[in-house]
Length: 212
Image (cartoon, rainbow, N blue to C red; front, side, top):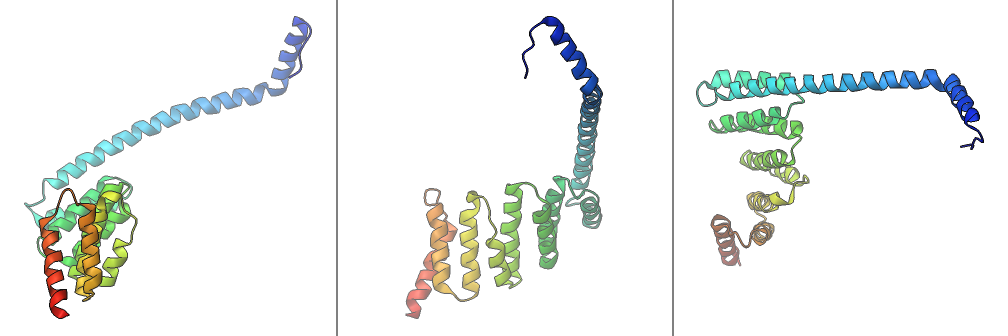
């Protein structure tokens, strides 16, 4: 920027600057102030919407285990009306659990897919993915289950993923792959231990030895 020699020159330069740019500056300030007001209004409206959605979610959950038909109907309507809410994936998980109680596995699969697609939380998405793979194995959709497990999930789900892979491979009679997957699952949780998984591995090892 040019350096002015006298105070008067500085004043004249400022006057000229405002003459040339004043309207644009004022317009920018007005737009910025309006945007600020609008943003806060948006955040307030968003908060009110979230509180309303939370209340609706809690109301629906009071029906769980009491009136299955009403609960399912209300839950599905909630999902349809609140596609962008974090409560949608929770509702879908809950509906999946309700359907699982009646062994309606195709319906369980549908709800779990909804939970995965709508979830913005990696943990919820991981839980739904693991459950979906188990259901797909239950439905003898082994390749679909393995494809589901190929999804990128947080490290904390690695042991569960490997164990379910083992179950899938065993269904395909791929005993060596199953044993490898079970062992990988045990290696991940070596300190915590998993007696049920260890039993799977031991039984499989015995079957493999007998077949030789």
